[in-house]
Length: 585
Image (tube, rainbow, N blue to C red; front, side, top):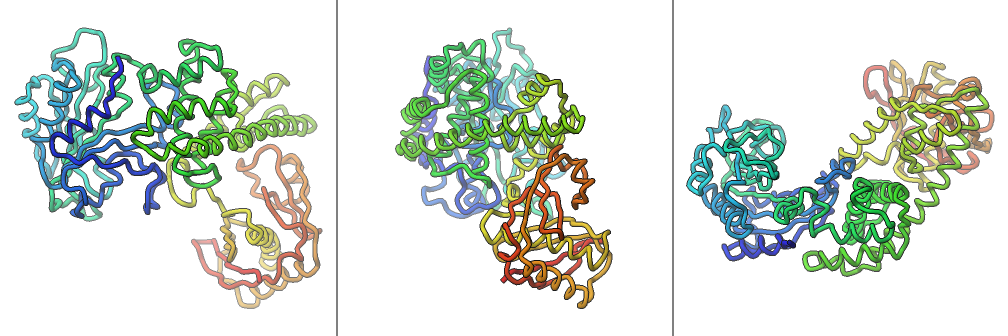
């Protein structure tokens, strides 16, 4: 049975005085605080605070969403990176009683869910908000038995949580008994057979640094996941067997001659990531190394890697066929999908680039192993395993398999450490998280990066060998270099450092690079922290006979390209750490 929950939902609320508004883009407009819209309410926050919405006080929509936190969970029966949320809102109009009546009416009379399969939770109260007996009474008026109502604390029935800044409030959550077992009379929210299908938030508070205050208007914010409710209404326990996914699954089966039943995890990942990539590309997003583009690049890379496990060639025809299905399903709601040719080309170009990168990765793996073997080392450390994963797309199991074939071990514990750090960065959503110290590889940035090597050595010459780099940040206008030192530099010391750097620039020193094991780099006298931030094989950049440093690059070919170096500021960063800002002209 195929159920179009989106049309049923939107038509129901339209008949009840709500205006259907279009979905906001996946990429937030004028909101640098997050990478993607991940909830239905996110684009509407200003209107909860009293700003008047041009469409009135009663709204509903289907909002496309993307959640970073779900990327690594995809592969089970319920998680998706791209998904849709159904929502209805009251902006200072109706409140608890009407919201609960609408939800109950839609679920039982329009979605035809049997009453005996429903249960709810309500807020049990805290120091400043009373127990929500009103909501419980409204549910009982609708026909929900008191044994099917559970009172829970703020961890479960307060949205978004008790710490986030912004609009907030208690909620009531609606659960469905998703099992063929006999339905228990008493509702136990800890029983996994009961799954949440709808959340009604009574948003009447504002949280800031000083605590909670009442909003001028009481708001209703509800959210229901399209994928989950569709699977429930169609009677399947696997979201990927619902009408939303089944034709996409069938396409993958046709291309691979493999059955979904025997290859569930990999086929789910391919289907999910293809859809997510199409939706992101439809908004004009291109793969890149920063921000939203990094996420698109990441999911396409994972798509290509996983496709190899099921012998699927992600060629242009497959991308075209997949995009056509998505377009037919969703263009009614998201007209940006009309430009299918652009979408296909964005994804295909990245697939081609990454396929070549994978080939390079295998060559890099072999080179690493050859160098290690020559040093009598038969284990690849965690940093190297992670670099192969992050740069060349080698998942650790691929590295492990290749290593085992030649008698090598790999450090999985070390890999897990770096991978966890990588996940935390992915979830952070800050503007700088994917940039590191070098914002881009423009010629100006490359010059400044090379200049930091000269500065590092000059500081050692003037202040002593105990001086070590503690961090750097570079853009096209200046360099910022942090180093260990216990006091303010004198004017004379700053001038000496500046003169040394300019002298080395005028000498026109060649910049050369070679690869070697970490032990060889140590013995050669290269500057480096020599911690587990490095892999087994490192690049050592030498500037003439003056500077030798472990670094990933890039650099100019000769110091004569740098211009004139000038220190513009020297200051304290923290105890024992100083900072120099300098320019090239």
